Amino acid sequence: MLWASVAHLALGNVLLGCLEGALLAKWFGVPYGRAIRTMILANYLSAWVGFPFMQWLHDQMAALQIAREFFVLQLLLAYGLTLVLEWPFVAWVVRGIPNAGKVSVKGSLGVQTLTYLLLFCVYAPLSNISLLTQWRPVSPDRLPLPSDLAVFYIAKEDGRVRLMGANPAEDVDVGPQQLRLADGASLELAESPTDTNTWALMSGKSVVLDRLISRTALDPYQASFTRRSFVAVGPSVYRVGQATTNSAWRPGWMAWPEVGAWFQRDKERISLGWGTPLGGWSVWRVIPMPGDLYLVVLGDQICLANLAQREITVLRYGPDALAFLRDQIEWAEIGVEASSPTDPVR
Image 1 (tube, rainbow, N blue to C red):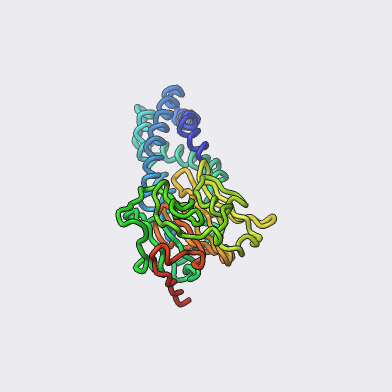
Image 2 (cartoon, one colour):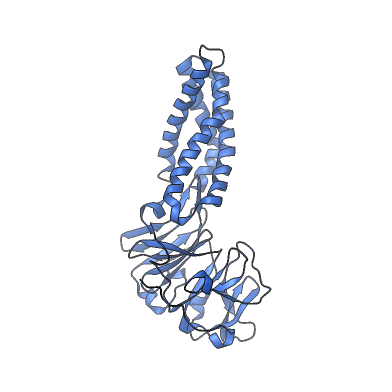
């Protein structure tokens, strides 16, 4: 998808301009050269204004719970924006002919409809909208976080690291009071600077929680996979609990240049992602947990996904999160209460 968008911005506008100009020349008898040159300029303007605007709109408004509705809105807005931006160029091409005003409107509607159908045929196979077609967004009440899990996350609103509770009001700030992590920061485990037999929760070089987990509770092989990466597949995915290693499902994800996660079981493959020319969310992390549950960092949405039911919900907002079994945590060492969140009534 990334390379298709780059090719569109760089060269695709020339091809579209040639097609639209040729159609206008054929339909209305205007000079081919003037029509093609003008429509090439129109397509470059439309693309270089439209793509950034639609990406900005996605970043400002897109949310998991309204993903389908927002996607339809994007398609309609993109079509309408193109009509508005390119109509003056069509009017310039057909100037001087009878009823030029009406002709320009008809010509713009005609060429934009045809080229949008063409672009749809090109981009549809390259886009990933499996989040809309294979998954069902639900409320956190329907898909609560299991009480035997401890999830630490970076809060979007202030950069604090928090321990997730049953609801946002029960979240607990952890780590140094003055620690505020920048947008895009991530969490990982590294050897404690004060005790080589334990793991510390880190963000870059910043120690969030020292002596969080004993080496006997989490082996170095698994701890090494807590570092976030653009791509992770199969055995290189960090997993919570021994039971997840016996699952028949093998997850993986890619955050760049394409976006999305996948879950493979023999020949069956389930995808999870949203990436189109109009915007998308990178999958920054997928953590398998007991019961075929997955903690998924989708853009700035920290989600819980139930693979068996194909359901997904947003738990919190932030750039990253890590999950552990509660009995792995050295609660006394980190100075946080060990009480677990109460499961909501199902």
